[in-house]
Image (cartoon, rainbow, N blue to C red; front, top):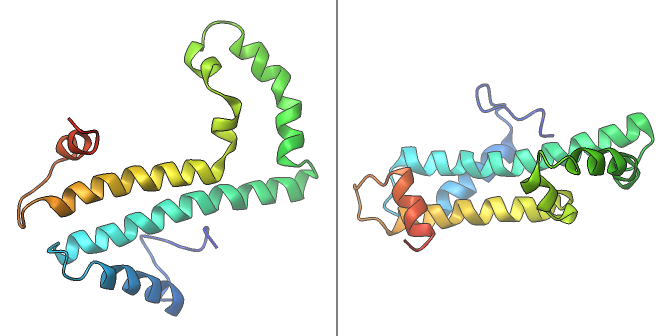
Length: 142
């Protein structure tokens, strides 16, 4: 499904349109312009599609190779330790392995950070432009 959805040439599929309509309806009364509401709907779609694309690619890789994700990680672990042990990548080496393996956690983190920024936009007075730096600063409590 993720490969079929296009933001430049969207299919006029009833379920996809209904999902977008549902998001737009949820934003009714928010004081946001129609343009901002549509951008929010598309941004939410893109977050979901990005996660779905990773899951779909993994399923395809497993089907084509017969190697599960755990099997691939196990096989790649020695090379990863070799590269990370060189000292060239200290920050990568310090990252717990489970952090990058948790696709659901990565999606939830990205969605939460997006919604933090969106909350700042919603809290701004109507008609006032909120720039990226302000969203970042307010979401981080600065």
